Image (cartoon, rainbow, N blue to C red):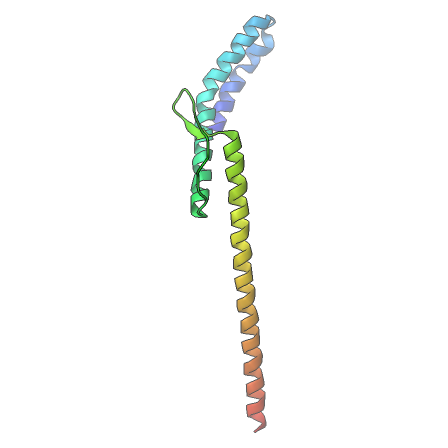
Length: 128
C-alpha cells in the first residue's frame, strides 16, 4: 500500500516540476493527494488494527480512543490516540518482560542452590 501511494505521488513529480503556473501546481497537488489518499488511509487502518491487536494481547483497555473515518471508509486511530496506545503497549510489554526476567532469575537462583546442596550431600556421602 505504501509503495502504491508513493508510486502515485511520484507520477505527478514531473508534471509538477514542469508547471510554472501556481494555480495549476496547486490543482496538481490536490489531485495527487486525492489519488494517493486511499492508499494512505488503508495503510493507516492496517497500522491501527495491528496496534489494537497488540494492545488486546497485553489487556490494555481501548476506552477513550478516538477513531477517524476517511472518504474511502478506512477507519483508523487519530494520531493522538495512536501515540497514546503505542506508549501504553510498549510500557506494558516492558513490564511483562521485567516480570519474566525476575521469575527466570529466581528459578536460576533456586536451581543453583539446589545444585550446591546436591554437591554438598554427595561430598558428605562419599566421606562416610
